[in-house]
Image (tube, rainbow, N blue to C red; front, top):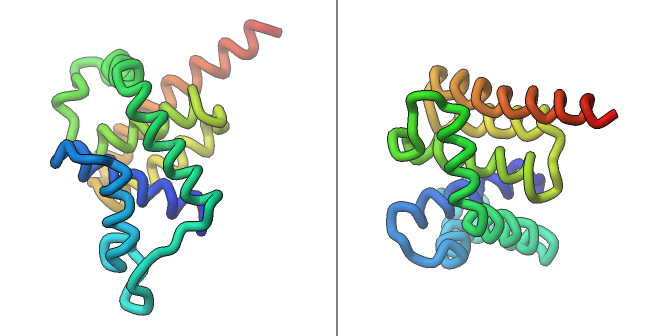
Length: 152
């Protein structure tokens, strides 16, 4: 499975977790067992994650939840008058994932993290949300690029 698809499953699990406050790993399992929720279509009834896919999804969920307060602070700092609580669930969780991957996990190149986040919000949000996500993550990407240049 492509990492893009895994990110989408993680996004759905985090979104469901935020609503139900249950176990996000149980949410991930539930989603992978439901072909419609997993986006597999009617040809499959269950998405079977390989060990590496399950580990990657688990690392994303655990990391995002571990750094949630820091991620929310970054989101609030870059979204000007929009606190995390004012954002929709899709925008909030996609921003958390984008910032987490840029800052903590594999330090995904910002351009890739931004592209993945924008593509995902286009599917689950509005055109305005895609511009918002791009702008917020782009501000941090510019800052990271400047910091890297200053270290040289």
